Image 1: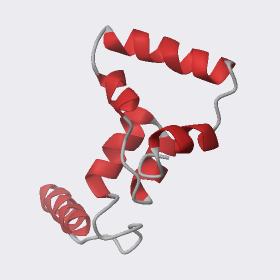
Image 2: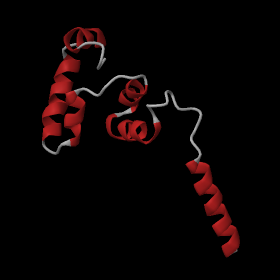
Image 3: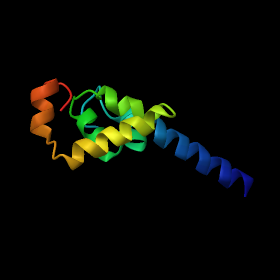
Length: 96
């Protein structure tokens, strides 16, 4: 039973060591894309994998107590009807 467990763990380790062919771009995705998806959501991860950078307000969500201010600002922007086109005009296509 121990040999079977060791063999299964070795096979799983080798399977994770082989790079996936389903990555969006060679320099994007992977661990960083996964962390961004976990911390900022799937929309931010998708944008990152397409070559966009994270906006400074998204990084603010990781800092304790600052995240409350950022969340309130995000709520107010959404409440006032801010769209992606507005953000592109304000910050450029690098972020949105």
